[in-house]
Length: 503
Image 1 (cartoon, rainbow, N blue to C red):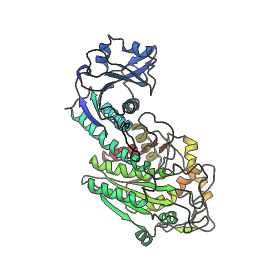
Image 2 (tube, rainbow, N blue to C red; image 1 turned 60 degrees about the horizontal axis):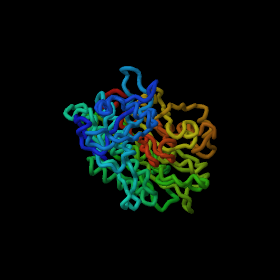
Image 3 (cartoon, helix red, strand yellow; image 1 turned 135 degrees about the horizontal axis):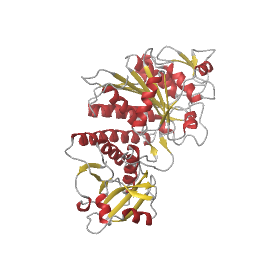
Image 4 (tube, rainbow, N blue to C red; image 1 turned 90 degrees about the vertical axis):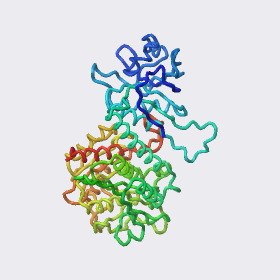
């Protein structure tokens, strides 16, 4: 992992392999961002002109490299685009800084040390730049033969303009490290091939983390699930030789006044079951446990940050496979809540495991429950590949979750739960069917889940099907593959709850 330090050193005399500066898109051309004054001075105040000559505009994601001026101990200057120049005295948006730092970290893969001279006006800037660097430096190469040509991540980044002795700056950096390291651990889980990350293996990772960070952990195996009557999780996992698990991971604070429950969909591989997915839709289905990975990472991060709130994570883990023992379309499952569900499509399995976990979480009567799942392709059609949908049983809570997501830089959008769509899940055989109307099917899934939330509990459902796995090229601080989306939103919700600012 890239090491982060705070430094008051001047850029010219700092021993590093590269100096990172920011450049914005101004009305008349590129503009050098604050933090790079010493570098600009070494170019006789003409750094913006030099960059423009080299083709730079300051657009977001743009990278321009040029030799460092004489007298600098670093041989290279790397200018990263920040996007449009903010209005006077407005300052740069946190997400612009986070993304620029991520681009810089990816560009400098294999470099031992970089001096980062991006704009630092306060502790918030320290935090977002730190996050961007650590998330942008991420690489998953466990399964590659790392020979002589392997670059590895950026080794160290010194944040210039920050204050090493300032308590707020130090705390901001520590938070960035804790959250980013756990988010990157979620990415590792998502990227791990399903032959290695079975439900049992995922549960073992949670047990190891629990020992490391002083968390309580309980793992229900097949026998315990059968004894408890978890028909949804068992039904989904029935077709696989890798049995399902339900993991309860608990962080408690002696000063807590509130309790949050996070529930994650953990389908370690989703073939669709008997309702087999068509060719071309199976290759990335190792990512169907992204919700559980996000929940796992958020609970561990809450522990590392010593938040004054109790946080319980529920990981509903199963592998959805077709076999002679698999659940069939038309089968009826009796859920942990006692309700019966007619399974019309075995590829609508995520809602089945979540239903059991939501009901289990509800029995502890938390102040709020948030579930996270790569649940429906319909949400991708509605919101694209970078935005997740938020549904809730309470408008105020949905708004609070949306605001938290936007605050940490995770694009999200509030979605409704239209009551008229509920009738489509009426079943002549069971209490409810796991499918309803095709149009609005992402909302139908949310309505299904609402049936399994305890009365009087605020609940939100995050459908992260779009942004959970990036099949395109990397951008900003987002890599190709598992992204770890929703981790930062969950952590922020925990922080707000601890501070008494969330309901």
